[in-house]
Length: 343
Image 1: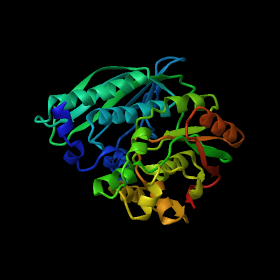
Image 2: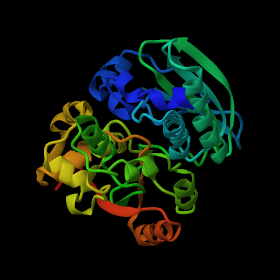
Image 3: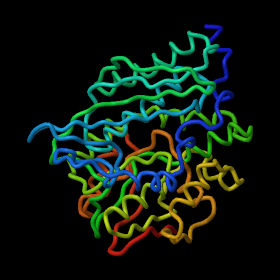
């Protein structure tokens, strides 16, 4: 399709993927002024906020509801649609749920060829189907900058929700995807990425956390979140503060995408790196090298699950993930105290 091939979607965006996410610090200030709804069946809402909202229907069923969208981070429209869908669907998996239904949330310039829009929707539909759900409609508005994502509804058992706030001292922490999507994408925008550098990040961003969640479910985790725009340290800070614990991240154990650490050492950073550092403020003690620290602050798109499980279950979970072809890696531990240590 000539129209599809001729449009460089990333040229229409100021920032792409989860690097375009609103500042976490400003978001906390904004949400602090909202009074949580007084509803007994609202199991997860704004107090505290999590990866998705959860509302109990009865003793056996609760609905999980989330919405996520962002500007293009790659030029190929079908790939963009698939990555945006994966990122939104993964919020349901991060709560321990299973997606049922999705609606498109879209904003496109009127002069964007209709074939491009069709490819974006087709890519999203493929991922929704892969997740076992249905893409049933949506809403589209005119905008000078293209944006796409999904509102997703899923289900979870009310007593099997995976919160951010459940980590316990003595737990071990595992991560199910490699880090560095933001760094490599930024290097591509700056023209300093080597040939083929985007292959591994795109493969990672297209991977649903469905299989990882299915493995983790059998190990009854204490806390789970997915690592996206606030970076590993930002999301770890949320997990630690809401659980009332201290998390120690081991710099040498962080799994990195090919070339990500080398590009970080060259000084490649996204705007999200700075915002994520501002978000955690003085709550993080760092002693790692500069490149590894940049990897930990790097905003991820469609990142992996960060899982906190009792230490005795950790080695078997790590081995089971790897046997399933999932890049599960132990990256740290949970202790008594507060804050995050990185080094």
